[in-house]
Length: 273
Image (cartoon, rainbow, N blue to C red):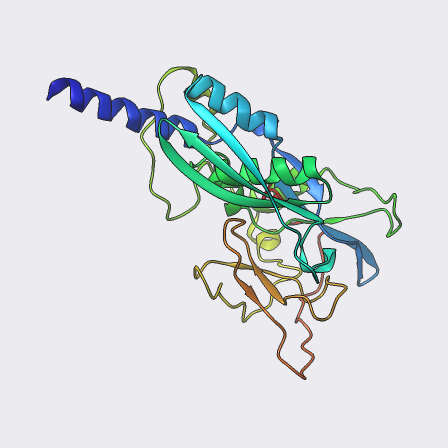
């Protein structure tokens, strides 16, 4: 009985170590969607993401030799395009850790992108990088709207200025036991929040934002940025959920946006990833 109890505690520590928040240095930002012109300013949404190697390093450090990844190429689905947030190819990832299996699907413009997307999505089901899904939208001012336009401000700094440093665990989430060993160094602490005046700005969010029809979580409002009018108006922020809200038939809806006074605020593709 004692040996079995100790084994259970060790596995609890392992799952906690896998789900421990990542150090800020491995989190990157990428532009998600095209640049838009809003009140004379060029704005683009950026999402936080991590590289697939970051996931591999976490697995190799916490469960060395005890994890396995299997990828399955899925058949192409006709009628999908980039405006519907779909890629050219898809993979299903089957990640096994200590006998526990989690699966998810990733898409991309090529095999490499789709495979790594699937790998990272499956890893999220074990808690790796789950905190990225709690990030708010990060709209950053750009120096133009051309193909080579660049952000005027570092997206990470823009996010921190508006929202404060991202919290280690999203509000309402169950607090995980502290991991043992050097994994504890990954834990981050939330800094002071941004001033209320900036926090109250929400450039692209409507006052009547709906909830995801599948999981009940928060959704992205894509009405101002989508190029295809037939694409979903809203998409669930949780990358592991495929909940969407389609535009009403025969009715054109325009999002209500507040005045832009600050060039910031957001994923990660990806969450992010």
